[in-house]
Length: 257
Image (cartoon, rainbow, N blue to C red):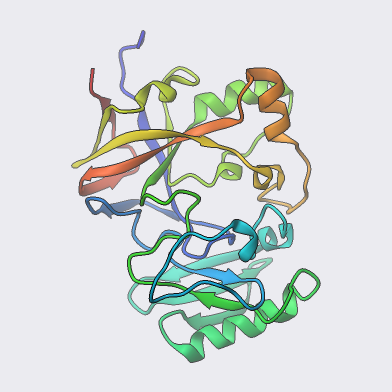
């Protein structure tokens, strides 16, 4: 790899509700074959939907409220309490909605807020959906999404734009390796903390990355820039959890030769 120190985890994020802002964690317990706990475990259907919790299967992004099209979502903050399954939604630091995602009444409270807040974007009444073991990811396989800060910095340098790594909605943000090196981790084991991951795909980026997570402005055209500069639209990789374990900020990543 041409350097002596191993890359480290600098940030851990989960996104309990697809399309909403994420939540920063200090550490997390990963389970074999699963996504990061409570990551994209819920989604908000845009009008009458086709999601069947008894037979969950991936649906096109357009079925749900999402950043790619509904950038106003980026103005909202979220906090998810695992013990009570309660989602608190904030705007400008003030609470605007709160509800227990595991209870119909709690979901209704949140749905009513989104019905009002996103009324111009909705095709019908919003509905919060979930299914045991199902993740509303862009990948059918439950996985962890990893983004390298060196790659983001290289992209910044070449585009001349300041790029917040949160645009890429990664679970693990890492630093300390050459730009784009993580693409070489496909089909290799990645040891972090007491867990072992295995890279399996590069992450193809969509127009959601054009939305500034701090301002909700659609102020960049990253997929187009990536294509122009690198002849691909990928930033980050997906990895499956091969062996569960604890992962914390500051943990080193070791890659199988």
